Amino acid sequence: MAFLTALLFFLGIAAFLWLCVAAGLQILALFRFAIENRLESLLFAAGVGVCLLQVAFFFLSLSGWLTRFSVYFTLLVLAFAGWRKFTAVWHLLRDGFQSTLRLLKTPARRAAAFAIGIFLSLDFLMALAPLTGSDALHYHFTAPLLQVGRAYHPDVSLSWSFFTGQAHLLTLAALTLGSETIGLCLLWLGGVLAVAAIWCLARQLMPCEWALLATLSFTLTPLVFWQMSVSGAPDIWMAFYTTLAVLAARRAIGPPSSRWVALAGFFAGAAAGVKYTGWAVPGVLLVWLLVEARGLRNALLFTASSLTAGIYPLLRNFWFAGDPFFPFLTRWLVPGRVNSYTLGAVLADTHMSRGGGSWLAALAYPFLVVLKGNEYGVGHYLGPLVLSFAPLLFALHREDPLVRAAAFVWGGCFLFNWLTSQMGRFLLPVFPL
Image (cartoon, rainbow, N blue to C red):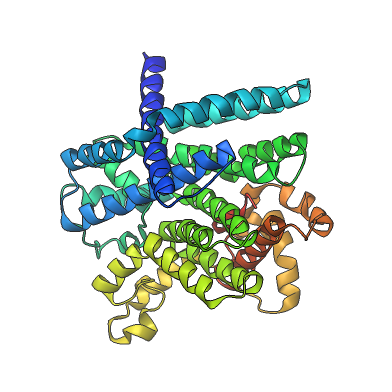
C-alpha cells in the first residue's frame, strides 16, 4: 500500500511537471527562443512554467480566490496553454533519455548515474514522510496554512509570515488541496530540477565523468538532501533558478541577444522572489552584464524582467508594512512603526551575533563557514567539498563567458552573504555554481 501511495504521488508530480514544461515550451516558442540542447530546453520551459504558476497563485491568494477549485482550474488553464506542446515534451524526454544512455557507455559513468538516481529516489521517499523541519513548522508551512481559504494578510502574531515568497505559493496550493505531502514533493521536484541544471551546466564545462561527479557531489551534499526531503524550506528552488539564470546569461553574451538578457533576468527574478536573500542573484548578475555587455538598454531590460518575475512579495510587504524587506528596513523607512523586539529576534535568528568587517575576516570566512558551520547557519551541511575543490578556481578557462558568469555570480553572492547574514544555508542558491 505504501508503494502504491508513493507511486501515485510520483505520477502526480510528473504530471505537474509535464504541464509546466509544455506551457513553458509554448511561451518560449511564442518569443522565438531557439534552444538546440534538449535538456536546456526542458529546464528553461520548466522554469518559465513553474514561475508563472507561482505568480498566478500569488494573485489568487491575495484576492482570497485560491480555493481547491481555483487550483484545479489554474492547472487546467496551464494544460490548455501548453497542449500543443504535449507531444514535444514526450519527444524531448525520449531523445534526452536515449542520448543519456549513449553517454553512459563505461561502467564508471553508469555507476555514477545509478548512484544519482538512487539518492534522488531516497530523497523522494523521505519527502513522503510527515513534516518535521523546524523552520517549516515555524513558518514555511505554518504561515501558508494560516492563509488557506481566505485572502492573504500577514499574521502580525507570526512576523515570519512576511517572509513567505513566491515558492511558498506552491506549498499554499498543496495545503489548499489538503496535503502537506504534495508540498514536500514539490520541493523535491525543485531539487531534481536543480540536479538536472547542474548537470547541464557542468556538461558544458568539463568531460562527462567530471560532470557526473559534480552532479553526484551536489546530490550527496547534506544541505541539498535536507532541503529536498525533510526541511520543508523552498530554498532549493532558488538553486534551480539561479543556475538557469547563469545559463541564460551566457547565451545573452555570445552572440549578444536582448531576448536572452530578458530570460536571464526572468530567472534571476524568480530566484529572488523565493526569499529576501535571493535578491543578491539579480543584483550581482546585473553587474556582470554591465561589465560584459556594457549596454544600458540590456541592463534596463534585465532589471524589468527580474522585477516582473519576482517583485510581488516585496510589493505585498510594502503595502502591509511600509517595508518591502520587513522588518529589516523598518527603522529607516517607517521608524514610527518599528518593533524592536521583532527586529532583534529576527536578526538574532538570521545573522551571526559577531561580524568581522576586515578583509582578513573575509578571507577566513570560507573556512569558518564549513569547518565551524554549526556556528554559521549549518554551514557544515555544505560538506568539505567546498574547500576541497576551491583550488580549481585558479584553473578556470576564463575566456568562456559561462565560466565568468558562474564565477562572478558565485563570488558576488558569497561576498554578499559575508557582508550580511554569514549563514551557510543561505549559500544554497549559488552552491551549484
